[in-house]
Amino acid sequence: MLAACLPLLEEEKVEAMEWSFDALYQLSEIPAWFDELLQAFSKEGRLIGHGVFFSLFSGKWSQGQTAWLHYLKKTCNKYAFDHVTEHFGFMTGRDFHHGAPLNIPYTPTVLAIGIDRLKRIADTCQCPVGLENLAFSYSLDDVKHHGDFLQQLIDPINGFIILDLHNVYCQSHNFSIAFNDLIDLYPLEKVREIHISGGSWDGSVSAPGGKIRRDTHDEPVPEEVFTALPSTLSKCMNLKFVVMEQLGNGLHTESSRKMFYNDFIRMNEMVQLENKKRVPGNSNLFIPKFPLLYDAIIEDEILQLQQDELSVIFESSVSVSDAIHVLQNSSLAHTDWHIENWRPYMIETAFKIAQKWKKKPV
Image (cartoon, rainbow, N blue to C red):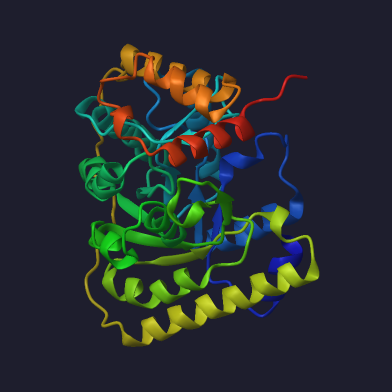
């Protein structure tokens, strides 16, 4: 990643940096060179924090979430984040850093839990807080209602949305819905940040076109995402950051790093062109509604039991057909999870994700 970014940093093309601050949990100390880089962007108000492992919708509060908030507080005391964001969903698996981020039912209970957790994040970091849209869903109904549910979650704290265009591309392909139609289902006035990235294809006989689009962040940005970027930029009047995401495991070769460079330059040119068109005006700064009032931690034992059961099904099943059979006879059947409407190829995808993320025995 450093080798890929150095040319862009040397050419002063990088105007801001997003850091997945909780992904370095295995390091006892941040390398000095990286600390200097973070401090440089922090001092200019151009550093943003992106969480991965908080598990916003877990039915039961965990020690890992307490530790996550403590770490966030410590990190915010050292670096000044312009804003902090988290992923939508809950993490399967009992180990805090080993699990698959999966979708949840859009119920009043889940909404209350999500709002409670967002308030605690905002109270900890004392800056704007946002959520990223999902790349994964089980059903078309989930896809169509995702934007509305995001808005219900963030409104109580005056929060915002990271609109990840590759995630939209995944949903668009996997559920055969036009990209622009899907974009318009999101509250675009709530978008403060846009992500673009690449991904990969998984074969599946029952999926549209015989393949599933996955948000794996290990390939160049697809043409469909670049095509959608200019029109999306113009629709997001409160947009402040556009970020290109890439995992280092996709940058081992000189050619892959060159493609990363070219994608970044192309993204930057589109952003600069949009900036020339924009008329300055009052924008939503998404400052949280302080003081953020919350009482006892909201939990739901039934939701947690269902999440645990779903995790076990996906992580312990010997095959996709086995997972589907067990799922149909589980406590999730005929509930707000609506597993009866889940697309078989998305169950297959969830199974593969969980199998990949689960902690391997030592």
